[in-house]
Length: 136
Image 1: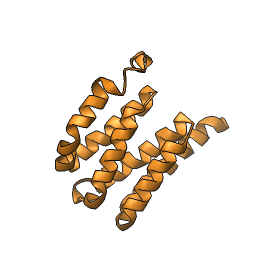
Image 2 (image 1 turned 135 degrees about the vertical axis):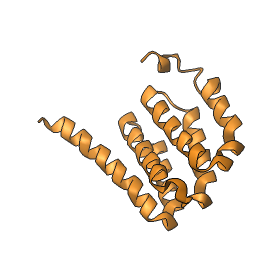
Image 3 (image 1 turned 30 degrees about the horizontal axis):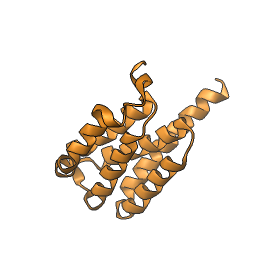
């Protein structure tokens, strides 16, 4: 196997581990989520940004119904909405929507209070300048 696919696989696994670490250290979830979203925003490489979203999704998925992240869900949802408004690749769009759907499943009250903003971002405001998003 060449090094490139192995490296990509290792990065994916590292993102999953970061998400699981966030879940295991749920008492530090606010700091970890803030760090992930700051790193997402400061990264210029889409493949790296995607990994931070994979980590966030894995954390949300692993916490699931336990409601371990209840105190930080408004922060997470606001960050995901901000990300949704500024996307420029189909992969980032899909992964951010996966995260938002996970919030909707496990924290419906948080999602419902933010639904309108998310829907507006998804339905056009954030995508108007990116017609190539749906070409894939």
